Image (cartoon, rainbow, N blue to C red; front, side):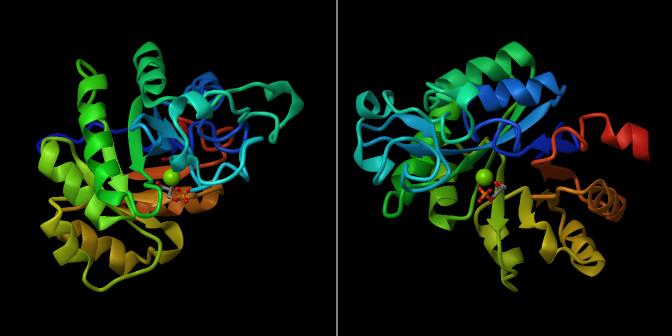
Length: 249
Ligand code: G3P
Ligand code: MG
């Protein structure tokens, strides 16, 4: 990748823990705190619409239930994805990727689009989300795609090779270098607990960038930035703000 223009801090699931995750209300919260980058999770409805949801099912974060990817967007669009979080968010709908792109444009925010396929729909989701991202982010800073699913990233690479990709790892694997190379990744997105000074150095020596998630204390964020981590993804959008690096370093 020629250029890496991403800020040092990204708001996890749009607005961290201050609003219902992965909704437009969450992105509005991220923007209110001045954040310049958001991370969010995208999957497909049964009829192929990319929308935001972390889990396979609707159960935890909405008043719906069951596997979200088995429902059409028409069915999903009636779900309340806000009340579970707080009464003031009652009626907050699930968000389409297209609505999120419009918010990013309005707020001048950069995006880390995590491809989070419904189990069994990995390739289809990787390809569809990459194509949608390419179309929706035209004229904006290029979104950073990421996924835990190698085959979703491979599909994204096939259809939109120009979009930068990050390989997500929640557990350390010794073949990270080969896998990242095979998928043409520019970054590793790692659970911050996996990051030791030696590993950060190794990854940087391999020419890869690093996003660390989910870092919720200023002390740990500062330590990781000093080691050379490129992006801190945080739920604590209130205390690890967009100006965190200016203030602390
Ligand atoms: O993309 C970083 C982070 O969001 C990955 O974990 O489970 O919060 O999507 P998760
Ligand atoms: Mg995520």
